[in-house]
Image 1 (cartoon, rainbow, N blue to C red):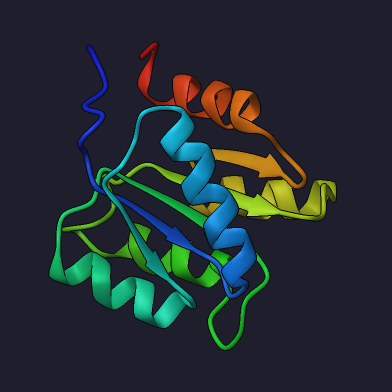
Image 2: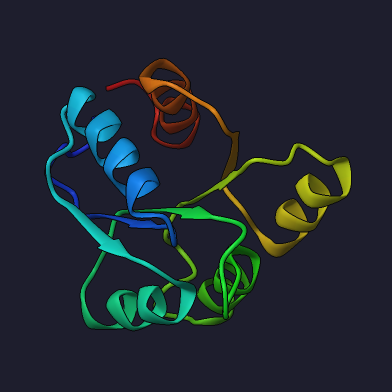
Length: 128
C-alpha cells in the first residue's frame, strides 16, 4: 500500500522552532499537507475538526502533554485509528513503556533527521 503524500499530517509542539524543523523534514520527504498545533488541547480540537492521516507530537507540553493527547486520541472512536508518532528529548525506558501502553504507533528521540523520520514513517506505513 503506497502512502498518500497528500495526506494531512498534524504536528504538535510548543516550540515554533521544532514545528518548523519537523515541517521541513516532512517537506524533504515529500509531505506538504502539514498542519500545526502548539499544544495538546488545540491539537485535539484540530483532530476533531478535520481528518488527519498522521499525528507527530512532542511529549513535553503544557497544559496537555503529548502522552495525554495520545490517550485522548486513543479513547476517541473517531480518532483512535490515526497513527501517532511521539517525539521526545528523553529516551527513558519508562516513557517508552508508558507511550506504548497508551497506544503510540512509533517513537522518535530528539535530535533526529529526515532519514530517522522516514524510517519511523516507513515502520508505520510501509515504503514510500
